[in-house]
Length: 294
Image (cartoon, rainbow, N blue to C red; front, side):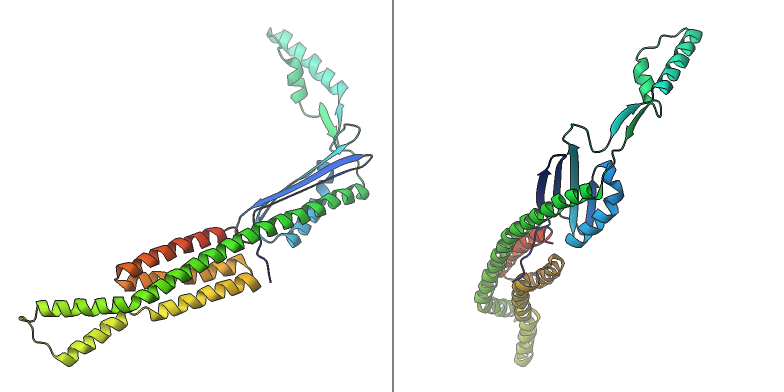
């Protein structure tokens, strides 16, 4: 049995050794396509394409965010070693003081102004090795496994809910079938009543009248719609168990909606129209849940 998966997911992994404390988190929401947002240390930016290609093979759809943080045990960031270009800063200081003297202006917050100039403060990236990257990829793999497990658990909950909604629609279809005979009699009765009310004004050919009754009964017949709807319900459950694709299930749900709508437009009988409303309600619940199925 193929288990459907939710597009909502979360997974995290953390690893620590003598040098590093590395943490990876991944979370996702529903999306028609795969949308990746990756945040990672600058020192590993040259590995981003490789990471994205790997994620593309593991995640089909969804709006996915991955965050990777890496800190050294010596309390320095993986990204940088802070350095200050002191000669350049002094040069800016002297020239700004000279300018302020010439213009007769005060120089408040001069330090903040100097630091904002280019190349005064620099972050020099710390060199990292392939072993460091493999350590990060280890946390990525573990986070992906937990992320996938989360999606599977959520998918199980959605699957049970979808089956419940389908079974409720079946109940309403059975109610429609139980009302069908009464509906046909109601149509006949209305035609006869209309005829009796106007019998003094018109002459009626009995054979033609019977033909018209048959025509209207066939015109408002919903047997085919009921039959197709039942087949769609069966096919939906079959795909849910064997070929669990959110897009495919959504296509089937659209076909179910067409049959239900046609049944409602043909019914002209309140008890059946009432069941149609309940079926539409359950179908909307199905469609809402399918938005989150992978």
